[in-house]
Image 1 (tube, rainbow, N blue to C red):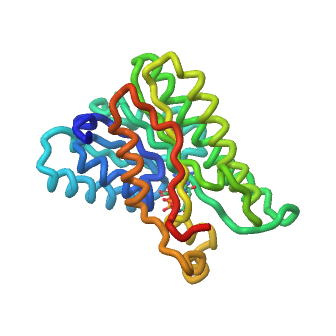
Image 2: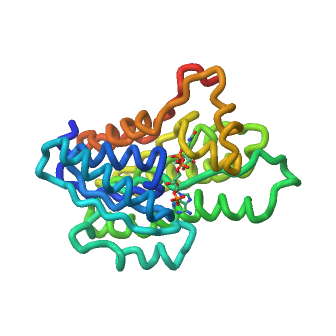
Image 3: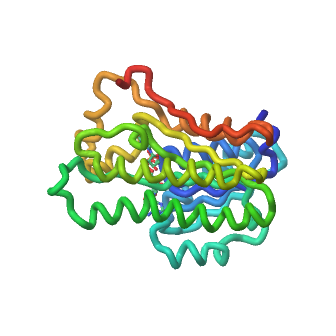
Length: 256
Ligand code: NDP
């Protein structure tokens, strides 16, 4: 029941494209306020405008405040200083969507640049943990909140050329599952969504801007869209307070 989301405040990392942008627009339609975080300011402003339009079209009076905040989740000082950039009206976050993440390359072990390894861990793991730590302190103090992590099928299964990315997403899975158990005596909910192939800028980033190579991975199947994952996230967030969607795996029908 989406009415449970009315007037809530959502914080989404990686809100400038793909799954994060689609999730923002769907939450906007459901009458929430949103903190939109990512590194690309212009792209965030476009998503903010799309949220304003979606909220207006919904006709809902609740929610409707959308704040783009430029933030690199791998920058520890920036994460620690986040609250100084948040408008006071959006200070009480109800739902954290930890979505920022990426993969670069398909290199085999022994041939992977140190910077590629460190970059993926800095964003996918340390950035996600830093954001979780920041919000969980708040959630514990207020005895409320929902943490939604975007993991991946790569957090369950290995693939050739994916040693580092799969390691980061396995780390997300282990971190999240442990935290869920720690929070069991609180009303705080913890969810991990694990998508299969979703057609977003993800594949373009993976192939370092080579759009044709990015497209080629979807041959023979119809990939998921950012909206498909957004629906899953908004659904999990709108369950009754006693229901915790712990983990979901979502695949294109034809993905092996
Ligand atoms: P996109 O590339 O479209 O989105 C990634 C988002 O993360 C962008 O908004 C990007 O914004 C942001 N981002 C990346 N690094 C940082 C950083 N250091 N600090 C802040 N924001 C950052 O791809 P998706 O939407 O597909 O990816 C979203 C999540 O879904 C990722 O965690 C990914 O691992 C996961 N996933 C994706 C799958 C797919 O097939 N697409 C499958 C399984 C999981 P900006 O560049 O502006 O900072």
